[in-house]
Length: 139
Image 1 (cartoon, rainbow, N blue to C red):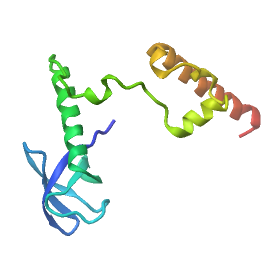
Image 2: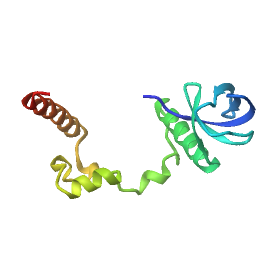
Image 3: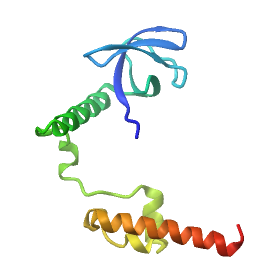
């Protein structure tokens, strides 16, 4: 899995930019994003900016990454995930529509009520079922 790291643009030279996360400065590729200027924030994925983000969004992502690093080091996330603490998980609109139409019977419960092992087993069953469907159709 690749995680985006928020970086603030310091300077731009063609399709390259110097950017910082406040700890280190990196040279990144900005050819995949709209024109950026010093002071703009981008999400960097392995040396390539993939999207421009607002400063508040960049700060929220940075706090989450710092919280994750703290937990991985044996500490506490603090308030890094405060925006998720009292939120009920929701499905993306296209999946919610499919659920409402009865097309996803294995998701008849709220996401947080399904055990992770059960969720993995359901996913494996779904993949195997899809393979069986392809085999029967001759595809």
